[in-house]
Image (cartoon, rainbow, N blue to C red; front, side):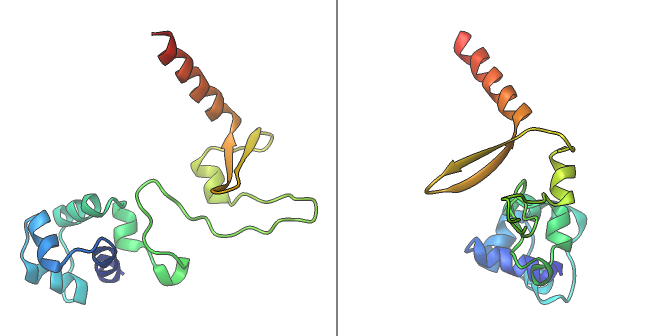
Length: 140
């Protein structure tokens, strides 16, 4: 999997193997061997590659585009899959998303919309915290 991810990320970022090699201080041949699956990068190279491509180490090593249907996501960005809208407009937020964003039964979520950019779901506590921070900044 890592070899596929390395090749895909390099192409998405429009780097040559030589440019990647220069950026993380290895040989072009090492990069070629990683991408061909002939060898795997050591831990220090994985750290440098994850930083270069702005992805998590876990995604760099384990992400499967075939299984998820999407390329390796940037660090901090997630794809939780699709949900079905019920006849009354209800959706079920995937478990992984609820755990990551600490959403519990009974929490208040805000639904925001932008006709050009789409819909966003924001936890009420996060908006309150954000507004509180704006108040602190403007008072100074």
